[in-house]
Length: 461
Ligand SMILES: *[C@@H]1O[C@H](CO)[C@@H](O)[C@H](O)[C@H]1NC(C)=O
Ligand SMILES: *[C@@H]1O[C@H](CO)[C@@H](O)[C@H](O)[C@H]1NC(C)=O
Ligand SMILES: *[C@@H]1O[C@H](CO)[C@@H](O)[C@H](O)[C@H]1NC(C)=O
Ligand SMILES: *[C@@H]1O[C@H](CO)[C@@H](O)[C@H](O)[C@H]1NC(C)=O
Ligand SMILES: *[C@@H]1O[C@H](CO)[C@@H](O)[C@H](O)[C@H]1NC(C)=O
Ligand SMILES: [Zn+2]
Image 1 (cartoon, protein in one colour):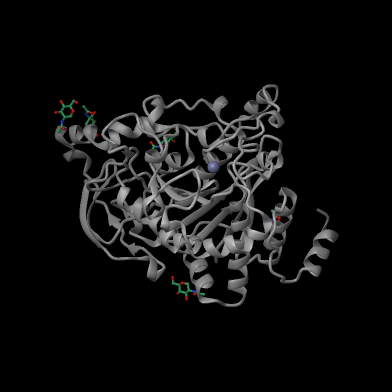
Image 2 (cartoon, rainbow, N blue to C red; image 1 turned 30 degrees about the vertical axis):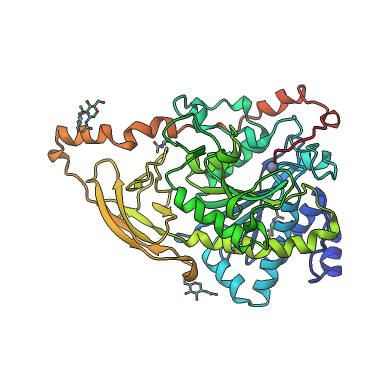
């Protein structure tokens, strides 16, 4: 877009509300560029990479320090339109951006406080190519997949599908859009996320898959943070105009209180929410926000009203639990220290990020934390955790480790370390993805199927 056009666009639409309609991919890009240009103090526009057909996957970050992470400020994200024909999420996220910016400019408390306490990343479309192929049918699945005909919500590495024990990530099997998201998760230490779909009305939470182990309880695949996930899902459904009634759509449900364990609904392998949770320690929900995958445009204002409060209340939940840093014996923040909460054996233990920070979403209560770092005594502390969201901050707590003098290391210390969760899980929880390899994109081009022929009646969403 030329600067003249940008100027005219800015000039002609100074602050009129965003129209309720389906903006195409080009218009979304144009809108984000405009928001970024006119709000440099609270927004930062970046791309996490191109789609198969080369359309940039634009993310708008909002916050009082939008360009980079600030210690103590958790990173949140919303992703929409991963299934190209499930389109309400695109509209909701653009309206959310509009709402945040307008609220901040009008000095409204909710917007100022959220943007001062949280960095919010918004990806309105994860599958722009699929969107271009989709029709406006409520139930059909044309446009669901990406340009290569691959369902992106089946293309992530899956901890239950043997990958945990075989750390090699088969890059050629990952689509461009999935690689972009995996790279994004490496770039930022996200704490909470949701991924917006359509075709049902329910908030679904991990796990989405199982291999029949101890996680399988009464038909659900239960994660160690099930209490937190259940709470998060209910925050969405109960703040939504009708989701909590649980029986809205023709072909899905009923869902008690409008929430469900993903696996209990139907199992999927290679889903994005399990990947976020297991491998990136980011708690993610799958939000099904409309019975119709492509609602008529005249319904958009009402659908926004039904979802607005939920979208904001869900972001606030990033302030649950405890956050802080881990310092080594010399008072330096340490990366990769393992921060565990008793009774929650996460498949891949939660670790401090490059700033030495950890974030643990927990409901109010008493928790025993164990912090482990090589060369340091295992630190165990009991913390009383209050309810953080009302304060726009989780409880702050730093852990000070004590170094083990080299001469006093006993064989017992070695043994303990060798048996710890860290030692057992590190190899399988830490694999690297060569994100610079551009090979897979070109090799896929020849396999591309004509999406126009793939019109399937689909009940899945
Ligand atoms: C966002 O706005 C800033 C400040 O005007 C500008 O420097 C930057 O290039 C813009 N980014 C994009 C992707 O347009
Ligand atoms: C942002 O939060 C900090 C405390 O975390 C507070 O001191 C400051 O006044 C807040 N700024 C605004 C604009 O609310
Ligand atoms: C135990 O730890 C010491 C000091 O870190 C190291 O030199 C030694 O090789 C370790 N022994 C085993 C069996 O790992
Ligand atoms: C550590 O693991 C070894 C081998 O699996 C086992 O024999 C030993 O009892 C374990 N020690 C502890 C303290 O759990
Ligand atoms: C993961 O692997 C990379 C590359 O092999 C290494 O640099 C990093 O320290 C590892 N992280 C952990 C937590 O072991
Ligand atoms: Zn979907």
